[in-house]
Image (cartoon, rainbow, N blue to C red; front, side, top):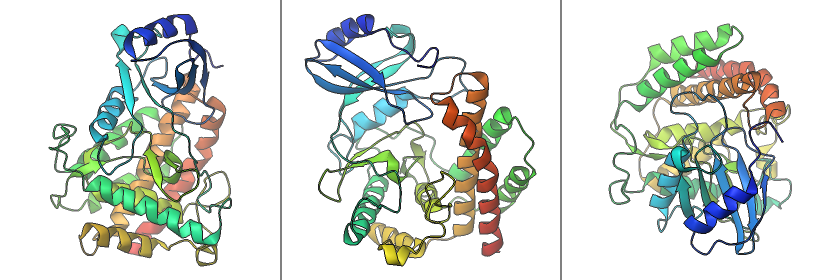
Length: 344
């Protein structure tokens, strides 16, 4: 295991027995191979199976790896139409037996689909799975944040202006290599920033197929996962982020739908997916789509630049994969510039 990511089971077991109702008899705590940001572990105990999600070790960027926020938002969403795992306990930095903040949540039995082309299911099931994702996203953006206690979960208004400032700053703080396309993209986004239209919703921040779990035998979302980037923001940010998938290449490890015959596979097109979402929320036509989609590509590139930097600094959760992401960053920037050219 990577230096600093191992967990000493004796101290953890005693702590969980004191703080998680019914927990007893820790047997194993093994890190899942997937994931780049907050290392996640499968915890086996005599009392059952759990999931532990922790901050990574080492020096971290300000506001990054906020497992405390993940715990809070999932606790708030329990009982809503947005399916999330039950959360049991949050250990903050100063009280953690592993030296870094973590939380413990329910282990879900279901399916995670890593390839958006869904080769493991039939044609009819593919459309139903995409429709379930669409319905979950619309349900998320319809949550009454005041009613669930999240009215202070982020600053309302001017979401894209604030996000552009944040991710531009984090990109520049992380970048190890000059990238002229990223510089050009940031400049265009700053100049094309649309006026704030007043829409505010709880946004996931990393809404994509492999961040949700589906029921074992049905096209139904049983758990939306990985809430680290969630906040109050503009709902179209989530929609555009997911719709990058239609344009990302299917090869080169990027798991997109680019170059595939989506109709033959039984998958909805980008415009159809957007229209279905808009109808579910009753919001009419989606304006400034080129900006929203280009921003989504930029933001993902900035996130990956941070992953590459953590690998360089020695505290990435999965350093081998993290280093491979360096080649994806210029691809994302180029796709964003293509969106801009199409839109103008």
